[in-house]
Amino acid sequence: MSNSRKEIVNKIYQTLLNNLLEDLGDSSKCGPGLYQVVRGVMQDNREILDALPSDSIDNLTKKLAESAPFKFTSSKIA
Image (cartoon, rainbow, N blue to C red; front, top):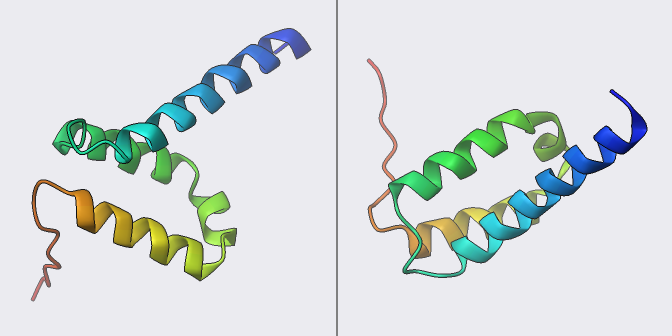
């Protein structure tokens, strides 16, 4: 991929991330579809997320839990 194409892709990706963060802060936009997109972005960037400090992850988890239109539950498979 050429340098300019790489820059365009990076700009699009950064815009996506910025908009996702803004949408997470707006309770009228928080719904299952948004959470699926966020989940996909997080899965795509697992290596980066694993390098984040745990307090940053804890803050994100808290923010998601507070604004979610549904409750997150843990399910154990027996």
